[in-house]
Structures are given as C-alpha cells and as structure tokens.
Image (tube, rainbow, N blue to C red; front, top):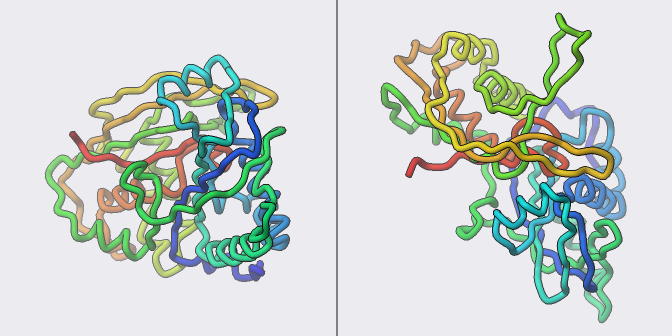
Length: 323
C-alpha cells in the first residue's frame, strides 16, 4: 500500500511496457479505445490492489500512469482511417493485440509486479480468468514486455538520474535538433484567465510554449526532490519567449477520434524543433543549461506523454533521430 503522506517524495524510476492480449472470442471494438482501456486498467488494479487503484483514481492523482488505446496488428494508415470514421475493428482469438502502459511513480511497479504474480498463480489452472474487459470483449493476458523492444521501440525503463547523465554527456552544437513524434491523437486543453468569456479550446499545433513548459511541470511533479529543481520552468518559458527554440520542420495532420460521448479533435505526426545557442552559463539554481533541460524533457515525454488525456490513449510521444 502506498503511504499517501509520502507522495511528495516521488521515486526516480520510469517504466513503459506492453501488455499483449488475446480475445476469448471473436467480436469487434471501436478503433480508439483509450477511455475503455483506462477504465479496464483501473478495474484490474482495483481487483488486484484495491488501495493503489483508489489512490490513483483520486482527483489529480491518476496521471501517475498513462494508457494507450488497444493496438491492432494493422497498418497505421488503416487504423487512422478507422479512427476518423469510427469503424469498429475485428477481434479474433487467432491474433494478439497490444496495450502500452507507463508508470511514472516508481513504487507502482513492484506493486504491479506482485499483483501480476498473484494473478498468474490464480490463473495457472485449466481455465484462465479474463485479464481485461473492453466494452463487451474479454481478453486474456499473453505476455508483459518491459525490455526495450526493437520492433516497436515503445518499451523500456530508466531513472531520472540516468536521463540527466545522458544529457550531460551529450555535446551540443550551435543548433541542436529535437524531433518529436506524436503517435496518437494529441492536443492541448488551453484557456486564458484574461479571456474567460471565450472558454477553453483545443490547441491543434505543438507550439514550443505548449510543449516544454507542460513537460517542465511534469518533471517537477515526478522527479525526486533532489532533482526536481534541475528543470526551471520560468527559464524555459523565457527561452521560448526569446525564440531560442523554434519549429524548423513538421509533418503534421489534423485528426480526430471518437470517445463514447464526443468527437475529440487533435493532430498526429512529427515536429522538428531547433534549440538555438549559445548557452548561457548555468546559474546557481541548476547546473544544466536551458537546452540541456529541454533535452531532459524530450526523454521524459516518452513516458509521460504530452498534452491532454494521456491516461486515456492520447498524446503518446517520443523523440526520434534525424534521418
């Protein structure tokens, strides 16, 4: 059980793993199932570890994990078309399907591991109980993949200290490229205190001001106390305002998916940012330059996602190397 009084002392581990699932019977499912996966994941946790599930479900606490939509073994083009048209996709016991889960609070992983071990012991008999229910479909757990999967490149684990070491060892040029791939629908729920009469809106472009201050806030929420101060949100905001980071290239497309109650607009694709020097000397608060801090945030995005509803399949993001 998590000690709720110690939430501020967040651990330093980040995990991204795949759950490979097999349907019990043939059926269909809506092509974007992020909210169904979110609910099913919490239901499984509620059964396996009730205290953890309740703690995660409390207001402002559930963002210590992310869930993807169910992933079909079909081409991205086919899935995008199905999502736009809300064409229900086939499920068959002959194939396996994948869900990506990330854990942003390190204590969650041993709790998940223990719960999964107990579940396997219960299901070691002749009849396996379903692991997850999505809509009307029941699915069995086939495999958990945590090691870096060379095929998908969406799994792995790290620590905040390892991220920092990697960035500090990197030699930066006068202009440093940083490319983000937005693999699932991404958007930013924006509003302005000075324009309340206009209400909030969905921002459909990954402008630097939407991306990096958001990730800086996540770093400060998730990193252990001795490392949280290494990322300075105000300095990053000033760097963006001074146009130190610019969009150099992009391949973005508007997109939308259907939730059970509404259509959600956003975008998918990739965006290349240029982090421009020279670097100012580090100040007394952080030994890292602003560009190093932004590179940290690029690695964090792989686990935390970016933008709105990352716990429901949106904002699945990673950095990619320039071709």
